[in-house]
Length: 127
Image (spheres, rainbow, N blue to C red):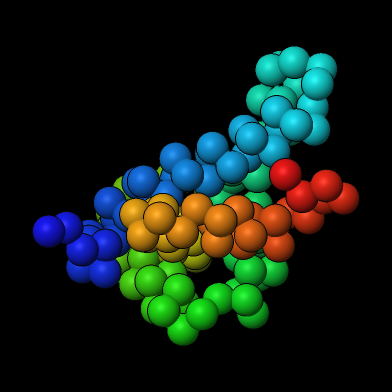
């Protein structure tokens, strides 16, 4: 049986990137009725590594020990393909965040992911 606790950190981040993207798109669906051009522009406020690092700063105090360990494992994973548009520090922090969201997704902790996302990006309605 597959165990998310032993899954490859980069694969957790790969999945977590999609989970994060879905949460962003869901948020924009409910808050940007103007159409997808505006939503795509606003999505950059959520999906860049630098915006994910800012989100992580808000989320960190709310993580359980287990979640922090998953984030740290994702952050410390060795990779050779850091994009030129982002610092290595930001890329690693964001990779850890995505690994956490992938991990929670695999455990079925969808509401926890939504809770953490809403801590990072609060709104009045909190979708």
